[in-house]
Length: 485
Image 1: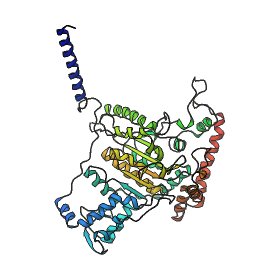
Image 2 (image 1 turned 90 degrees about the vertical axis):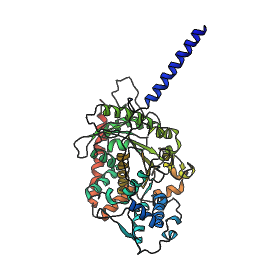
Image 3 (image 1 turned 180 degrees about the vertical axis):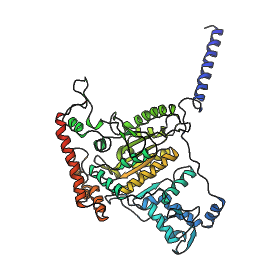
Image 4 (image 1 turned 90 degrees about the horizontal axis):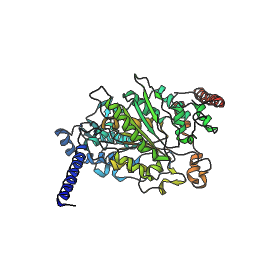
């Protein structure tokens, strides 16, 4: 090659490289299509008076911070009672010299306690300790002190410590919880209701196999007759189509739901492309594409990422810890070209993966610990308490609504039957399944509580069960003549 041609080639190559570099830099500027940063919440710092008060009562600050940081280790989270609990000296007020229960403290800027929905400025040591135990050592546990943003940590503490997020669960809602539990599904109903009332119009849902058919029939309007038709060996679409259909644990539906609001909530349950967590990036990609369409076609100048669409991912406990696609998808969650404006992750934690107990399946305390990769807060909740599960979902939804980042709800429960039809779990986990088979189911426990509170009667429960059983029997009969469209 002639020298002039060589120089020309070098110049052309250099110009191309510069243009490419320029495009790469330009791609990350906010004027480029696809670059979207979720809106953020400005949360004020402590006032000078609050800072002085914290300095004056530094021992109390350390005690409160101990509950916020490690109070989750003292909670009653295991419905089976198999988790070993040890004393936590950091949660003893005497460790900080706080031995006088009648001593009154100015708690402004230290702890949030409400009385009749009004924040209190002072409380005794006994009241402070009781408030901390009720918030951080009950049937719900919070992990948020690992979040690097101090303003977010302060908001989270204020929100869970005050009564501002507590909505009294009336008898009608408690009856609905029981009815859904009899059908076998209640957790997502609360989340869908929150979405609908907040003006969210699209929910993109991805989940694995376990529990999928219950959610389809109970909440997502999938006709039981169509499910029975599929179970009988038929395809889920007309038989003259040149296709073989999918396995029953991959089918989906996309209904519109309404919880008494002006607009519907359209829920898209995605077909699972493979096994377990493989659907996670599909939720992110599908949701992002739909999000951009809604964003670009919105007539509201204040429309922000996550206002109209929410991503929901349901996980199994062993798969959430064990599959790399979980970490890979989480790693994209806060990038401006991939973010959905926050996804709510629900881990259905059965404390076992196939035949392996949690103690032999991971090296971390919780199955949710991988989510700390993206500084996501974690809310653990004992599945024996449906109203506490509802509260956990409300906290998660409010965090996501305000900060537009991922949040984890770790629903700790148990698996009554084996991994599949051929698995007899008592062979490999005899102690666990001796406990499971000697205790009442969650619906039965909740039914008993509502009867004690005179919310329902024996006749009410019998009617709920018989109506649902009768409906399924009628649908089974109808499946014999069912023809998919």
